[in-house]
Structures are given as structure tokens and as C-alpha cells.
Image 1 (cartoon, rainbow, N blue to C red):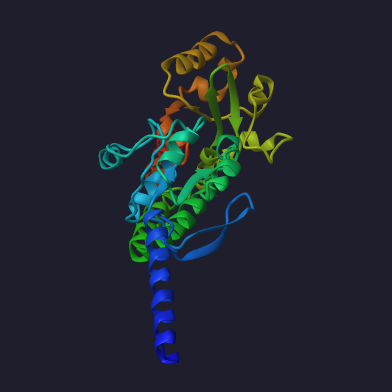
Image 2 (cartoon, rainbow, N blue to C red; image 1 turned 180 degrees about the horizontal axis):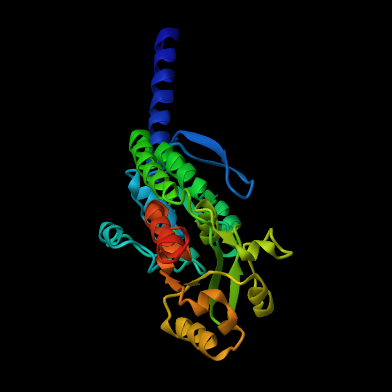
Length: 319
């Protein structure tokens, strides 16, 4: 056999083996997708697909914004905070558990190439398990209005539909400017945001999502005057509330449980200290929808701000 023929045969064998290896990787879902290095909100550096194809979401807000920029999911959270129109779009998408208890086995069975959650222990705590399976976890920050805009930009990059993301951002920014403009010339009210959870009530500071919205509208959040101003929520103190005398009280329940609202109403009616608060005297107690205020509503943030504006300014004498 001539030397030339041997070289040709060797090349054929190498090409054949390369083709077999590529097919094997493809069949195992391990094609060499383009990757990018990013740093999530926890400061963790991870490598994720440039355009992920199988994304699992652990919370409703991220899911909402990803679909708003043309994305789709293979896994969604079990949540009552998903907007009706989005709920129809994701009706056939498997659930992976509530935000505070994601089902790792279900997530792994969906073979995602990216999992997206928020900075809570129940999400960050599964990072190592996912990493062992070769699945990156991206923890996204959703505490402010700016976080919504930044998320839309990032998700637009992931879906490859930056123009759609830009249009959605501009829509939200325009509505935001319209609402904020209406506060001009009006006296900012002193406001108290009460956050209700089973067994306890807290005051939300401007570090919380709802507190940030009130701040954007110029309201004076009395909880910001407490010592622990770096915290999103601080213990509710009646003595402090009476001293600060809020003009409006906004009540938010993390869970759509009528019993929690009823408990707060009962406290207002039976606690004599509440009767000296200006907001109570003037009947300015507002119950805010949990799906818009207990969590970041994503693309519905302008709607949330409009409701908050009405409660803070339109329904009171703040001219």
C-alpha cells in the first residue's frame, strides 16, 4: 500500500471518528452551544448559554419578563402571581414548585440548560446540586424599578430579541414618567407600608420592592426613619407609628389569604393606639394586591405604580 493511500485512509478514519463523536454529543444534548460568562446578583460568576433553549424559572416575575421579550420556558413556578394572559401561554409548561420550595428532582428531569431564580435561600441553596448536573443557576435581582429595566435588557440578549426588549422597556419607561409627572406640585404624604405574613406584621422600608415604588413617587416612608434602614423590612412598632403619624397606610399580604387581611383589620379596630393615627382617622387604609406588590410584578410595574399613586395622592388632600 502506497504512502499516499495510507494517509488518505488515516484521514478518512479521523473524520469518521469525529463524526461519530459529534453525533454522540448531539444525542446526549451536549452540543457545543456558544457560552458567555456572567456575574449574577450574588456576585457569583457562571457560564451560561448565549441563547439558552431550555430555561426553568423559579419565580413568576422573571418568567413574565422572559416571555415579554420573546422567550419560552420548559419549567415554571407554582404561583398565583402569574398574570392571566401569561397563565394561558404557559398552561402546558410543567410546574417546579412554589418559590419557597422548588422541586429539584423535577427541575433535573426537565434537563434545563439554565435555571433562573431570585436571591432567596431556597434558590441559592440548590446551586451546588444543579452545578453537579452541569446546570447553571442565575440569581436575578428584582428589588427596584431599575432592576426591571435591566432584566428586560438581559433577557432580550438571552432570547436574541433585543429590539423586543427595547420596545418593552420604552413602554414601561413612558408609563413610569407619566405617573411620576403627576406627583409634581403635590405634597408627598407620610406613608406606612405594612407587610403581612402568617403570624407577623412588618414595616417595609425603601429597600423593599413596594417601598422602592413609594419612594419613586416621592412618598415619605416612615419606616426609613428606623435604625435598621438597610433592611427591607423592620418590626412593626405601634409606639413608633403613632409618633410618626402616617397619612396613609398601605397593607400588603404575601399570600392571598383573607384571614391575614381580617387579622389586620381586627387589630385596627381593637387597638386604641391605631385610632390616633391620621390615616385611620381619615379612612386612608389601602389593601394592595399581593401579585402586584408582595413580589415584583415585572412588566406590570407601571400598573402597580399607578395604583400606588392613586392611593397616595388622588384619594387624599395632598394638593
